[in-house]
Length: 488
Image 1 (cartoon, helix red, strand yellow):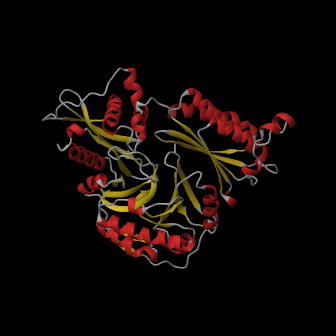
Image 2 (cartoon, rainbow, N blue to C red; image 1 turned 90 degrees about the horizontal axis):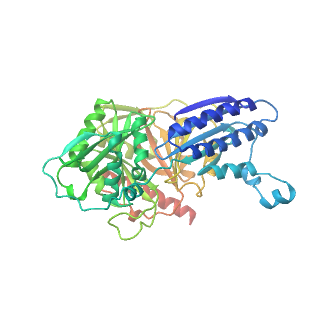
Image 3 (cartoon, rainbow, N blue to C red; image 1 turned 30 degrees about the vertical axis):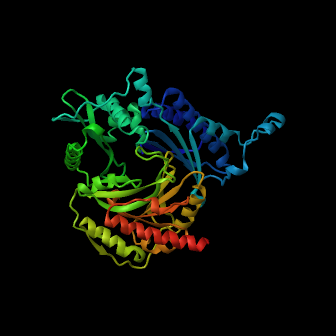
């Protein structure tokens, strides 16, 4: 989150918030025209809310500004009158013939942004999410403009130089990714040098690059920093084909682990795809331990080395490396998952004490955060606080997050809150199944991660390497089978 503001819903605030949004959008990486379109969409929404959402009294808006490497997002939350956008659709013929422009506002918003999502939170109000993609030149276009052809790699060098990654390296990184993986690399942002440059400038990541004595870039590895915890993802790595089996990955990983410890990070984690087990094996070589399996985590793609497009959305294994010694965690373990969670903690070398709770007393309102990955079509809901309205609020959000918007919804439940233990049976009835443990994932706290999958998935195509990953997969298979039996 870059910024969050609360405003009284009156016409006088519209100009100020759109001025801020326009400047913020440009600073976040949007081109001027795209920033203008996003600002116009925000102006239309805020104007409609001010004019129609609070007919009886003056209300309040909360506007949140988020940036990612490849897009920016503005989230407007309000507690005005209930509203169903499906009942106010724009009809072009009625507008031309009868002058009836109902629904035109939403139509304008949709034209101005790349993704527009309406979230009905029931008694917790409504949320409007505007997303605009950051446009940057693909590395293949840059190479064509520069007249660079794909040439064979030189013979491997006996010596290499490792450097801290700077903005001067970003184009070479994109070229290295393109020449090594074609278009199949999972982190698509790396094909756009400008996006990588912005991420480095904002401090979203740090990394290393390895060059030959002649200056040729042959390897790259970076850590993407989490936004709400002292953890980082070892999420971007490549070694040129001609320079593999020379210890370059090991050298880079050791450097990044050392740097992560110096920066005070508590843990590193990797999201290894299950199309093959190579990346999982690499993580485990450096002491990473499997804690979760996320089904349908990324969009389907054709991977280099595979003859055909992968037939389903790609799943991911989560591997963790604990950097800050943790001897013990005192948690409320749900009975349904006590055995597997204890096994994962033991695997991480952490003793877990299962706390006993007094009678559960909940506040009136639950606090949930929602993060939508528009590119991979997944959503993550993080429970910050349970409340009496938790299940109602969650159902309202899930009704909005339909299969047209997402392939999977992941739900992080705080293990330091006794309410998690009580909610599992209800969540199982809502077709949430086990995913794994998310240690230190939010504010250095541990979470049980569940998942709800909206598409058919064949677990035989999900390949895992470690014994723990195999154990987690078997539990997921059992729970998927139970859901299928109920539906049959």
